[in-house]
Amino acid sequence: MRRRVSAVLALLLAFAPAGAEAQGVVERNQSAWSPALGRELVYNLYRPEMPPSGGERWPVVYLLEGRPSVSDWLDQGGLAETMDRAIAAGAMPPTLVVTPVAPYSWYVDNPDPGGHGLMRTAIVRDLVAAVDQRFPTAACREGRAVGGLSMGGYGALLFAIDAPEAFAAAISLAGAVSPPIDRNDVARLKRADAFYDGAFGRPLDRERFNAWNLFTRLRMLEKGAAPRPDVYLSIGDRDRGGLLQNTTRLHVALLRAGVDSTFRIGPGQHDWETWRREFATALTWLGPKLDPACGHDMASSGAPDGSKPTP
Image 1 (cartoon, rainbow, N blue to C red):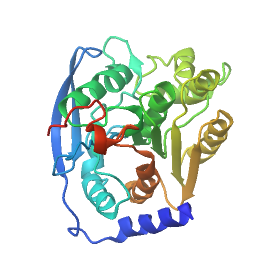
Image 2 (cartoon, rainbow, N blue to C red):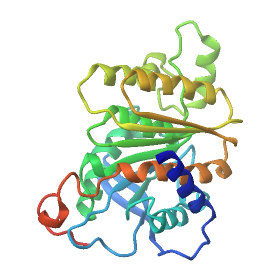
Image 3 (cartoon, rainbow, N blue to C red):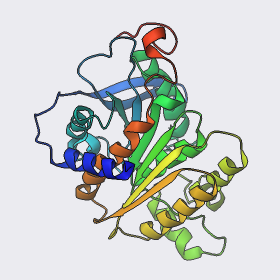
Image 4 (tube, rainbow, N blue to C red):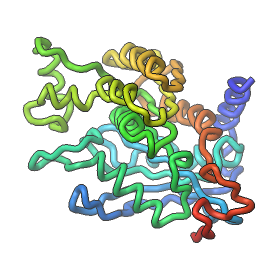
């Protein structure tokens, strides 16, 4: 029954006429100081037009760009319009969406001179704290999710697996999922060196790449006592480069690790036509998982910390 309701909501989001819902606000080129980077971290955002009231708070979705994008979620992905429709249809609560600008970083901590810096730490620690300080957010695990496409899909899964205490859910649309590189796989090592933009060293350090690999990190999550994030995987049936096979393998590994993983294979390729459609569908999955109250009774206690939210 729940799948049927989600399917109906997805259709409503896909075909609802533009302009029939309240409009959110887009703010570009915002910045927050990141001690991890030693510089400002730039981000774009979508927020509801009206601030929350009556002790309510906004959940936050950190939405990661693909390679080499800086604002494609807004410019090609229809982020604002899709969020407007999702909120108006009741598929999502009024939600803040933050899209960090981190092209070619692969969302990992890269200490190399001339590299992109400690980007994972910058986003998971510094940006989350800055956003929670600036906006009336549900500053808790239950009110926070991460998503992304392609390179950003890898980053979203990495953040959720690495920091499950910070993110309750993750969405990966055609995430750049790949297994570790075998010691003797010289051909693959050469291809990876050309593909990963120096994020794992120049030349690519196989051990470093494998240490940041999702399958490796998942084994660490499986052995620990941290809460498991819920995961939504989506990929087109005509996607490229073995991503369909690798995503299928990851889905199985997630289930074995005790993660509630949903896997959707739909029509499409590695393109925005596919991702726009699948993002709307993913929101119908995500909405019920977000708790703006952080497990508190908002009617009696106001904001999760007992204070009143401010715009």
